Length: 145
Image 1 (tube, helix red, strand yellow):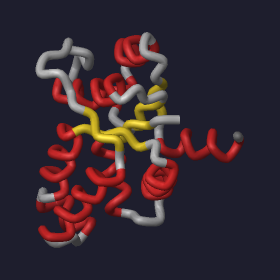
Image 2 (cartoon, helix red, strand yellow):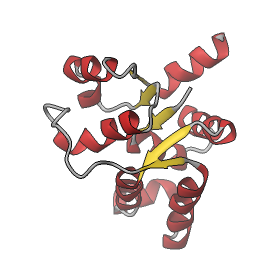
Image 3 (cartoon, helix red, strand yellow):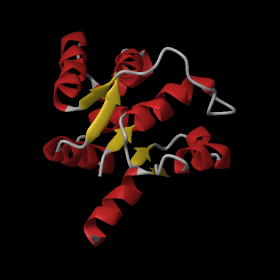
Image 4 (tube, one colour):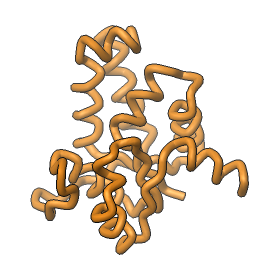
C-alpha cells in the first residue's frame, strides 16, 4: 500500500509522537510506502513555523528543518506537473495533495481535511484507484489484515 499523507496528518504526527498519525507515519517510513511531494513538504515547513502550531510541537527552526529533511530522505518524492486540473472544488490549494497521490500512484490519500472528503474529490480519486481515508481508518485496516 502506497500512501500520501496530507499536511494536516504530518503536522499531527509531529505534535503528538504517540498518536495515530505518528504511528501511521512510522509504519509507512518503515515499509517504504510514504509518497510525498515538494509541495507538501513546503506547506509542512510553513505550517510548522506558524506561532500557534509551534506552541504545540515546541520544535526549534533547526528541528523543523531536520524533520522536513528527514521526510524528504525517507519518502518517495514525486514531482508534480506544472499545470493540473482543479480537483478540490472548495479549496483549490489542496489540489497538489491530490496530485501527489495520483503521480505517486498511491492507493490511499490520508487526510482529515473535509474538502478532500467531498464526494467530487472521492469520485475523482476513485478513477485512479485511490481511496481517501483517515489515519485511524488506515490503522484499523492494517490491524484487521
